[in-house]
Image (spheres, rainbow, N blue to C red):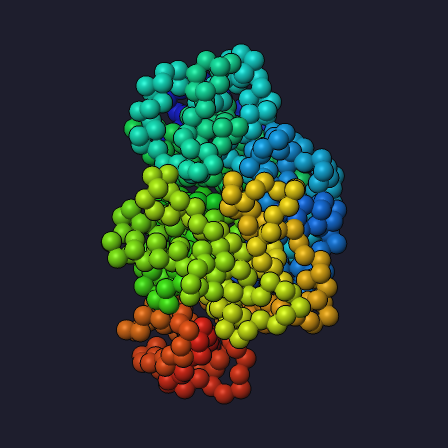
Length: 594
């Protein structure tokens, strides 16, 4: 599989055979020095290929500094994570970042060092071992698309090193740049417009999809693949068990295209997976592909490679559509996303979530290809989440580059569902129900549902401080607050909103663990009727869930889907579900076969 993928990308080069032989030697060397404890995990997981889907963990995502200060500090949070039921910890970028602006760590200056203020490589290995001992998988970011402009590769290229100049894309004519820009999208239209940055030392314009200080790597050069494969294996040998492949859709560039989701991207991912399967087969790959739902199938592999690219991918369409449903009290966009969701190869799964460190990016709902009424619904949802008369939400919208629409929305879950700012205050019934509704959907749908740091404490938007950039510059800082120790203490003594949200997620996690073993391997069937506010979902004959995206009680006419004997699993009530159920405002029920 490795040879097939790489020969399709680089096989026409006369030096391919020699290059490929050197790559195999490097892979074998990494396998030979893999620690014995990790080799034992590799064997165990190879013997049980369905280990992830058989007992899918609850995930948790956090920035190291905001969550616990340092990597050593993260170890002190393990008891809290276990109390919440977490079995998968994603720590956002912790490798040494660019000096100054660095996209909150995503502009990596060294793949071989931890950011000094967070610790060092020994701290990383110690944390990974401590997490493994507690049954928690460590997920780290592998920033694939780019490096910082002060990374040694970029520095060498700027100094004239021919080999490393080939690691980057450089256009030498402004007309070329303008021609490319006509086909390309803008990731950060307000804060970093355009896709190229003029660098005099490089003699032209460097391709910089994200920020001017993040230089895109040239994967058409096989040396780039070999270098990133070496990074992957080194970090895997240090104890990272899951890699979030940041910005995966942008890896391959071809003039005259949007340079997103090109077929070669899948080949690169299949090759990276094959590298791991040879040297560290217990390690998983997760695609960060924030793309329209139909485009996501390729990230798991297709054809003969189905199930041999990434193990997991974010279901960002489900997330965005759930916020639109909450704002509009209408599940039409949710139903569309479920209908468009591709079936997955065995052993693969969706990562479902409510919020994360990034925007709610509305383009994943395909506004450019959708009907006018769907585009209007998305625009209305974005306005609602920005607050104003009649809204319970307190978020911030980001405009598109052309100013004609909304690119994304920002805000913490608590602020977007209307939980109180004062942690000592109890949340009102409807706000807490909205919070529960969104997390219940994510927990029920995803192979790995993800809790974003602070959500378990009902923590709201960051108010801003001298330590963070102004929110007007980058609205994503709204959902990047420091972990609130006061809220954690209140949760631990059972007081205020933090106690409510923490206990609610604990109960949801307990209910999820009682779902049938085959639940996450079974495709979702949308059994919803004519009521636009109700979403009724089934997974085979063994599990069923109803979600009321309305501020009014709704009678569930379940019809065929409720035939037979069912017992409620969430909320934990004593009586079996009848053929017709009245869901409270923003209410939901999970059932399993009696």
